[in-house]
Length: 358
Picture 1 (cartoon, helix red, strand yellow):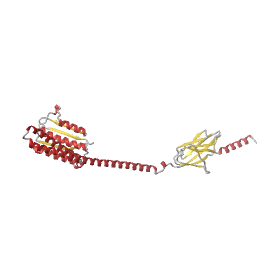
Picture 2 (cartoon, one colour; picture 1 turned 135 degrees about the horizontal axis):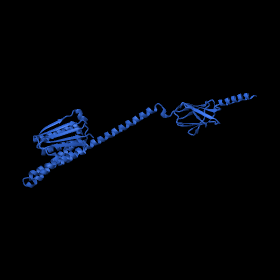
Picture 3 (cartoon, helix red, strand yellow; picture 1 turned 90 degrees about the horizontal axis):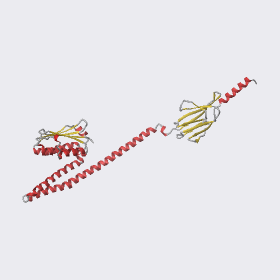
Picture 4 (tube, helix red, strand yellow; picture 1 turned 30 degrees about the vertical axis):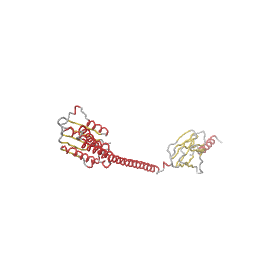
């Protein structure tokens, strides 16, 4: 046979060999060997996140592709392909060998990867619903807890108010009555005792009034701002009218604005006590014939209380602070309130109180 014939025969044999694809020898998932089905396919579950495919080695180059994952063909010189974290779906793996610059037919392998629970269409909607249910339950129990705490506080305030009124108030009233009786019987015989009895009576009556104010503040039925304003108006008329002092009491708020005001129980109590202390100071020191009270709302939604008189006033630049002024500042500091006091001799005094919501 001629050399030309032998060359043709060699090329035919090489081409025939090159047509045969590589034989897959091993498939493992997470280190566990897998067996191919007769149809050259393999099913993997969702937990098989590390896949390794090996084929018969030879003195040649290889290339493979996993269709369904990407369109890139990978060339390499060792007979191993590895894949990690495959999502659920169908894939086709094929591999070829190259000898004498001729690529063999591809050896194909069908892969079916089971979808994980997180890849199911209903998973994330279910998670969202679960989170909403948890959030709703948390809000429900939080509101329920707050409601029960408010009920406990409501009951406690009622009990304290009743105890103060029934026990302490009754005791102080008895002391005041007894003092007046003693004053009538022994006052003429022992005049030196009379000032002491009068002081006891005065202190008892003031304590009774303080107890009444505290009971009114503690009573949950008086928690509204509207009731606070009405209480202030009533007290102002009771204190000023007997002294023939004219009162201008103005509430420059709409019912909607009054409902928008958020004032805590402590603030409500201190607003009332500052107001009453200011009126008492006017009665004691101002020698005024007119008092004006103005209740309004600032642009920031805060309550503003203005109390002014046309009395003799004082020099505020001298830094004088009596007990009344100290009480104003202390109560304001305790309840997140701002106070401004201005006064001039002969021009009266003006007190401004800003109640900051808490």
